[in-house]
Length: 495
Image (cartoon, rainbow, N blue to C red):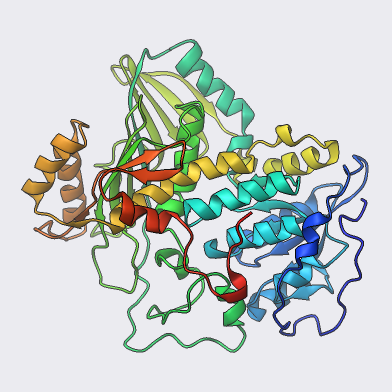
């Protein structure tokens, strides 16, 4: 394939050495390549060599017409094995070395969440196409800059919500739910993610930074805060500075799936959001809730999203008091329900009898078809063929970021206060049942639901035109939704 940038590759330094920091050159913004030839090989570089990154690398290495040419990770304990596995000489701790490489047409971004936006923007400024893992952003403003960059630099940018590529499943569900109205009118949706997450520890002294990790590069745009969890990697998910908790980890998939099939991508941003939850059980350094319920006012079909990272006392996953699948959603209709789980779905009549079911394509879990879709779209120069364009991913980001922002603005309530407030403000009509369900689940984990167990948010209102909060607590919420604190050369640029 034609090189997207004909620049001399910076050859100084060893493959696994620390690369000195330098800003991305502004002149890259003027390098807009012509369409690529459909018949030529696509060359990919991987940014982030953790579990998800290695899975993406496996996909590229196995699909025809694609080649992995470089890998990058600030953690040498991950970088070295990745380079060895794929026989690569180009292995860097600094992703900017990847962006200078003329032998890279597109990047696969599987870094920690806090790097997704900046890495994507820098890559597109450098003339690279981008496949970026979900969740896209930690603030609305950052996500919008990625969308702007794709348009300004005329780059293809696909978000890693791979279930959108399961066209057969989505077509079948939409036909049954909306065209045929097999179950009648839709009344409400319940989305679930219930999966045990172990506590991340609580140290008395800050967690030491291992020698094999370039911590400054790992932090990138995140703030340099002391860490009191037991390990650096992965558990960044449960800290507001670097992650989204389960809201963004699995909510990014499940809420996007619901938005696609049930709301038919017609509701970009929810009108109102209310969240109740807490971090319960063994005390640890985590900040994100490990149990929460969020109500979304969509303007049409109400949606409730429940997450739990708890186990019951017998160390089994809890399912008995969960409404619907443990990881999926239930569409409640006037004539029955549709249950969507990770890999298929079943339509039931009002008596609980199966009407029909469909199995999804298991290949989508590994992202093979999704990356193939990205590559085919690049070869054909057809951006509209992308199954998960970046703007779609940006719209879905409101569905997992807004609940987190609402939760962070909440305060402790008694159970009776909570029910009274929710019934009058949420207007969902099911909050008493929902809180009883939460109380039962806590009891299964030998946790008592007492006054102050949970935090309840204000009911936040969103304006789809301005992509900002309005009304109650809007000023505080918008501080989280806008530009995050900037850290030197790693500041996310306005595009």
